[in-house]
Image (cartoon, rainbow, N blue to C red; front, side, top):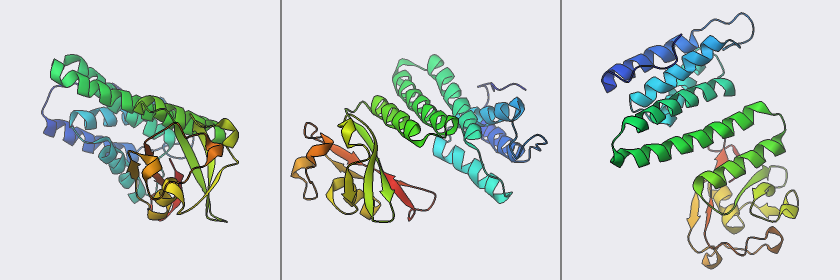
Length: 241
């Protein structure tokens, strides 16, 4: 099975092939393990689906949603390994396109490919280890490196007492991990959790919600972006990035 589709053809052709491939993917029969199984063929099929979707100029979010919806309609659960295959195929197709693009498009495509590579690293970390702490540390490092920021942290929600717990960080005082608690609704991070909305503040110390937590060691940073982390439902908050 060839995992590298030809770039020839119109966007309509690639879109049709992507639609056919996602249908084929959810219909794969597995005899050695629960769907999608453990064989290489299904991973190559996922890579082809990701590549055709990229060539059809479908957004990655739409590409993944189509797979999740199609699988859900047949009562199947998409695994991290399968998602990784789709992301890998999508990334490879964009990288190939960047090589043949004009100078004006090359920078934009290369930047997109680098972000996809980061997303793939995060997904690999999430599926390769059952160690949550290790996985979260990989996530914050990848996000910091990809976004070019100085610090990145994850606060997980403790439902029992409505507190956000500093659970992973790069750029803050490591002694604060597991020891810093922020009440939901307090501070910029707490407000993002309470409202379920991203908060981007250019001068954090002047924001009305700002609260100084000396034990975090973030006094040297001026701007802050807090992104609520939720499961499929917006009401199922799990933390803040």
